Image 1 (tube, helix red, strand yellow):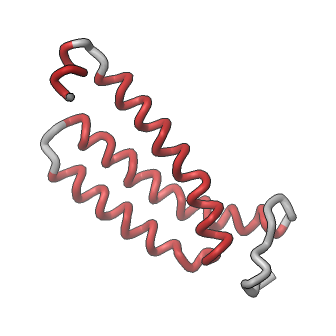
Image 2: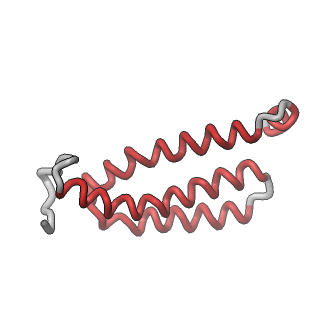
Image 3: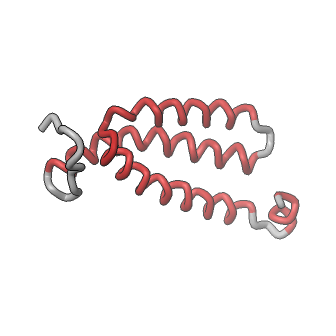
Length: 104
């Protein structure tokens, strides 16, 4: 597949599309993670980010290494978004989970 993309000069578009999809996937994951677990799950995204960084360094293929880098830093960004999601729930922009207790 990489050979096809390289031959037709589509690697940049492929990385751009995958980056768009990865970031787009993390948006609902952040909302659901906060709804069910609150900010307590930040360490899971930290671990995913660390694993992504390590794999990005170990993978020799540039395309997959770049996508692992996008994945890992999207995981790190999600930590920040979890805490911002808490603020959005406080303001009433997103629903509270009725099965959880909130510190606010």
